[in-house]
Amino acid sequence: MSSSAKPAENKLFKRFYNTSLNDLLAEHNAIDQNQHILSLFQRCASDVPAYRQFLNEKAVNPAEISNPQHFRNLPLMDKSNYMQTYSLAERCWGGSLAGADRVAVSSGSTGQATFWPRSAAYELDVALRFEQVFQDSFQAHQRSTLAIVCFALGNWVGGLFTTSCCWHLAHKGYPLMVATPGNNKAEIFRVVRELAPHFEQTVLLGYPPFLKDVIDAGIAEGIDWREQPTKLVFAGEVFSEEWRELVAERIGSTKPDFDSASLYGTADGGVLANETPFSIAIRRWLAKHPHAVQSLFGESRLPTLAQYDPVSRFFETHEETLVVSGDNSVPLMRYHIADKGGVIAYNEMRAFLESNGVNSLRELGLAEDFSPRELPFVFVFGRADFTLSFYGANIFPENVTVGLEQPEFMNLITGKFVLETRETDNGDKTLHIAVEMLPEVTANETLTQAIAESVRHELLRLNSEFAHYTPTERQLPEITLHAFADPDYFPKGVKHRYTRK
Image (cartoon, rainbow, N blue to C red; front, side):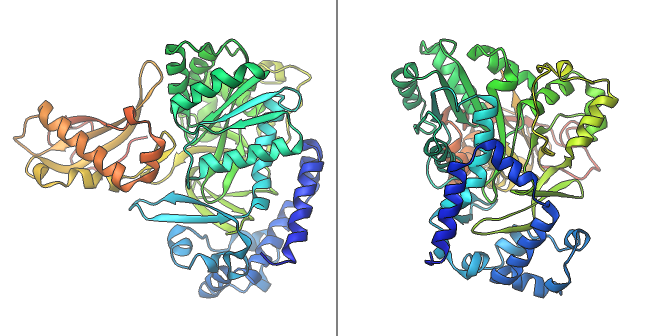
């Protein structure tokens, strides 16, 4: 890193550590978000070689981009046309990795990794999202807190990024200890038994189905999560409010709005948004009013609903999918993240609630003196492509195909399949794959088991996220064999979809 960059970094750290959450958000609120994103665009066009070339190839003159409408007409970048087209160094500020001191890795559909370098200074925007959760939801600025990171540790973004952001909060003065057992249940339980009694509350951070596994297995091993307040931070997957209620009951929570929060994050952009007590209360109300869900989101299913800071991460929509811009070692400028969703302004959300008869916070289950953060909302259904999320790992149809395209199966199955996640009556997630057999072939347990083993083998081989995020006992998929042209999964005359959401 250049010597000139160091003072600027030190100023960012000093500002974060010495400024309260309320003041930091107030400072951001005072910034004109449109001018802010236009300024970031001009810096990228000038100082990021790949983006400069990208614009040139699209015949875009940066000098002509001077208002929000111009910005909204800029070409979208994505992994294919940008991240996989230009070298890693070219995508960084100044065309060099010198400004970055850490890296995260995400798995692609073919198993080819994408590297996302960043500096500790760029973590501060994300640490602010954690601070919102820890202060607004958990009151961790006033209570001694044990934070247990249950995400996989390693090059994957979840574990170490979460750890680092929690360390930033501890350095800021939060009475916080951070333990890092990763997704090792035995180590998690050892930390809980030895350290939790020394703190006023414990926070478990991890992927939703894994945290449920931890809670259930802990109960079986004699851990009483109700002995002291236990809080939960989720990331990576959409879940139902019924599931939240189930998990809350098992930890003795009576205020799910304040005892849990989900983060919306990606390897490329870090944490983009976070659930708040207000967004959770709205979502819990929506879960009981399905007509309102359809009206608000255009679909009957309930997405993750979070709030975001547009100065940190600037959201737009493109054909009902999300586009995000934000500063980082590899800055994102109108980056298409392929998540189906949308944005709702704060005032629009309040107006929607009032139009549906919700005229007070009490009707959402919140205290009348509760003061919501006046931040816009982003809602996320999940991947708009054929990708599924399972224990936080992106599962790609291409990975499953390899497991089916083995010589011993070629005279028995067509190669068509439908990939989906299911939830058991107990709230556990399973990976289910419906496989189409060739005509005249009869299903049998030997074939079912052989396909399951083959798919698991290839998922472990090709998908590092699956290998490291998914507990061993959940890695064997549930296979069901279906007759040729089964109308439920493989109807004739219909374009086949390899995933079912």
